[in-house]
Image (cartoon, rainbow, N blue to C red):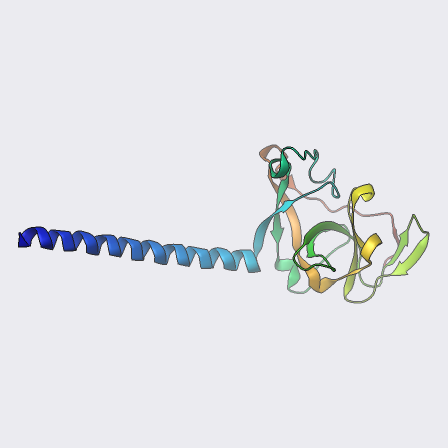
Length: 182
């Protein structure tokens, strides 16, 4: 009988060791993943048609997130705010910090931006940038809320990762609304 008790205790100890080891590994990989996502790169879904045709060629409300493009966002550009005209960025909404937007940088600090609909000209202030969607008819961007602070930028989009048939590098595109670079 004592032999069975010893075997039972050994199996309980083995199960506890396995669970402890498994928990430590999950916690460790979770911390590493969180660090990578926070400091170096992350994967973000692009929803809506404001960046079409660059992202989400077809918007199907029935399919929902199955038709969304998923993009790789690098965060090394945040160290010294290394951005260029035409970069596609992810940033927090100026009015709701929980919302993330994906838009293209049109103007950097000191640039003069022309708005075709109102024929106004505006200088982008220091510490800000002007962003617009690639599909102006369905984009809520700097034409609506003005220049955004560089501190709201969360990273630069470098690649489409999903769906598989659209995997590719994202190119910079210059915009015609810049009147005079800084």
